[in-house]
Length: 58
View 1 (cartoon, one colour):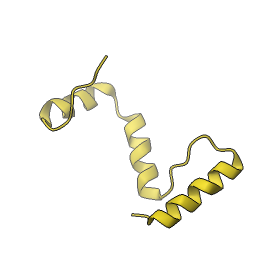
View 2: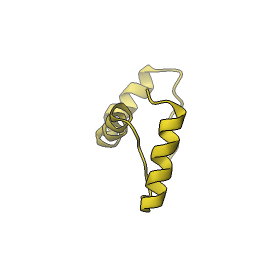
View 3: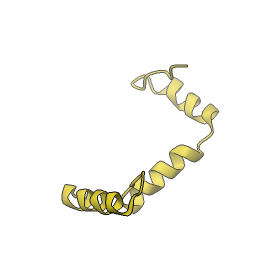
View 4: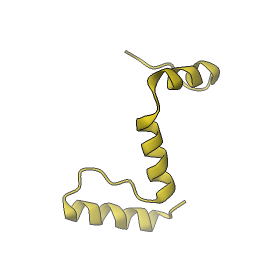
């Protein structure tokens, strides 16, 4: 887990480079990538089994 100062610094550096998206940290980047690559049926399956997650809206 990165502290707020390091995250803010990464965000400012990304802004100065003109990057539209900044995902600092290896673990956070891996989670963001996994979320994009996970098929929708798998996400729906997990949501059905996790009552604390809200259903997806169309």
